[in-house]
Amino acid sequence: MPFYRQYGAKGLKAVEHFVLVIIAIATVVAIGQEIVHIFEMGKVALADLLLLFIYLEVLAMVGNYAESGKLPVRMPIYIGIVALARYLILDMKSMDDWRIVAISVSTLVLASTVIVIRWGQLKMPYPKNQEYDN
Image (cartoon, rainbow, N blue to C red; front, top):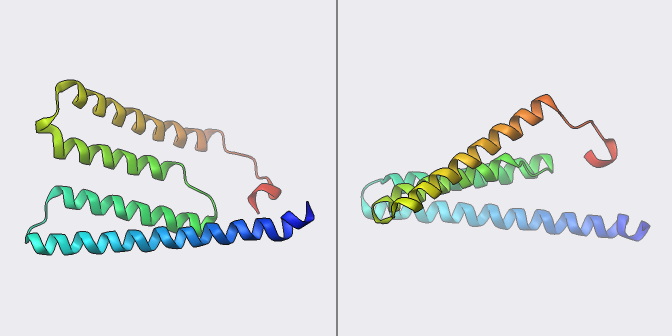
């Protein structure tokens, strides 16, 4: 066990930080590509703004994870909500009624999940555990 604590945990942390850097770089490249696309089209569409917002949320999530060492559960849910809204907005005309209802209900479930998680964090916080938090 001492070998793992000395080398294994540090190695896993190094891989974790490397992958975070890759995700951040890939997200910045995707933002740049989207901005180039906007300039090439000569106009900004709602789909472009929503996609940029998704990229911004991914960057915020990476930054938050790098800073605190903890993955915020709500941030991927926010990304999912925006992605569903973008999908609904862009493809609504070609969707049948049941698909629109399913996406809308999925969005409501995700939003309700955020409310429940936030309520749980406020009313029933985790006790501080020094060994886990380090």
